[in-house]
Amino acid sequence: MSAQRAGSVPVLVVAAGARWEPAALESLHPGAGVVVLRRCMDVTDLLAHAAAGDARVAVIAAEAPGLDADAITHLGRSGVLPLVVYPEDLDGAPERVRRLGVRSLVGDRHLADLPAAVLALSRVSDEVPLHQGRTEPAGAGRVITVWGPTGAPGRTTVSLGLAGELATRGADPLLLDLDPWGGAVAQRLGILDEVSGLLASARLAGRPELAERFTSLQRRVAGFRVLTGLPRADRWLEVRGDVVDELVDLAQAQGDVVLDTGFSLEDDPISDLGTRPTRNGLTLAAIAAADDLLVVGTADPVGLARLARGLSELGETTGGRPVHVVLNRWRSRLGLDEAEVRRLLAGYGDLLGVHLVPEDGLAADRALVTGRTFAEGATSPLARSFAPLVDVLFPGRESAPPPRRLRGRTAARARRR
View 1 (cartoon, helix red, strand yellow):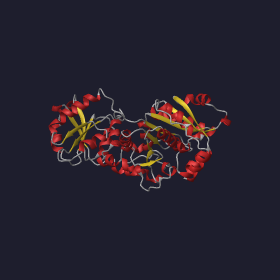
View 2 (cartoon, one colour):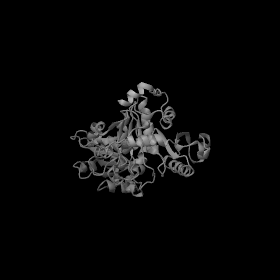
View 3 (tube, rainbow, N blue to C red):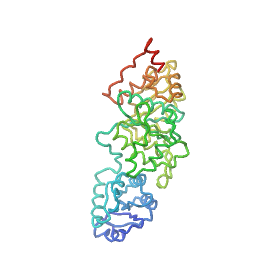
View 4 (cartoon, rainbow, N blue to C red):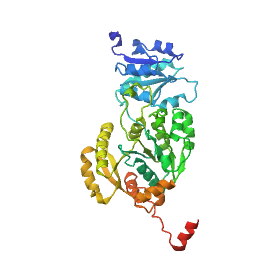
C-alpha cells in the first residue's frame, strides 16, 4: 500500500451519503495521482483522522452535518486542506461554502474535475500558508477589539467611549457585544429589546439570510449601532466562535467596528474535536479579527498586577502582537503617569501606547442611570478622554467641535424643552 501511495496525494473523504460518492471514489485513484486513505462517516470522524497528520486534502460534501468554519479551522491546524463538493442544483451553495473559509470547490456535476482539483490544491498548499486569517473587504472599516483581564477593568466602558467618540466625528460605527460571560452593552445603553442580536445572528450564520437581515438585527443608540449580546451567561452554548468572522465581514462593509469581549483566553481542550462551541471562542475570534487591539486595566496595584499577567497571557495567544493599553479609573493621587506605567509593563508585552481614562464617577453614574453614552455629556473628563485614543487609532479623522455651553436665558429655554 505504501508503494501505491508514493507520489500520490493522500485524501480523506466524507460524503455523508451523497449520491456522488461512488463516482468520486472511482476517480480518486493512484493512477490519477491521488490515494484515498479513508472514507469517514461524518465530520467528527474526519477531524479525528485528520489529526493523525497523514492526509493532505479532505474531500467533503457541502451538506455534511457539522461542516462549519470551526471544522475548517481544525482541518487547517492538522495540515489538511478542504475541498468541498457542492450540489449544483441548490441556489447559493457555493457562496455558503466560501463563507466557511473554503477556497476550493467542485460541483457535483463535474466530478471528472475532482482529481485535478485535489492535485492543484495540494500544489498551492506548498506556496500559501494554511492560516491567512480573515480577508478584509476592500474599503472596509477598521476593527478595534477591546479586551481586558479578569476583575471588571472596564472593557465595556472603553468600548462605549470609543464608539461614542467615533459617532461624534461623523462615523457610524457598530459595537458588537461578544462577551460570552454575559454582555452588558444593552443594559448600559438602556436597550430593553428582549431579542439578542448575537443569538439571532448565530441562528442565521452560514446562510444568505444573515446578510439580508444583518442591519435589522442592529439597534441604533446615541449616534452609533449596536448588536446586543447574550441576555444570560448560560446561553453561550448557542453561539459558535466562527460566527465572529462572518459578522465582522458584514459589519466592516458598513463602517468601523468595535468588538467588546470577555476576559478569559483559555481554550477548551475538547474543542479540537470540533463537536461543540467553546465558551471563549467568541473572545479568541474577536482578538484574531482585530486591526487594533486595546487591553484594558485599572490604575491600582491589584489592577496593574492583573494587567501585567493578562498582557503576558495575551502575548502567548497572539504571538506577541503589539497592543494599546488603556488604563481605566486613573487618578493622579496614585502617583503614576503614562511613562511610569509603560516602564512597569514593558516586560510583559509590546506596547504601542498607554492611554489614561480618568476616574469620573459622576459622569459614569449619570450615563449608567440615563442609558446614555459619555459622549452625550461631552464636557466631562471621562468623555473628553477618548478623543486622544481615537486620534491614535483613526489618524486623520476630524475631532468633534467642543460643545457650546448654554448660558442665561438660552440655557433656561433648553431646560424647559
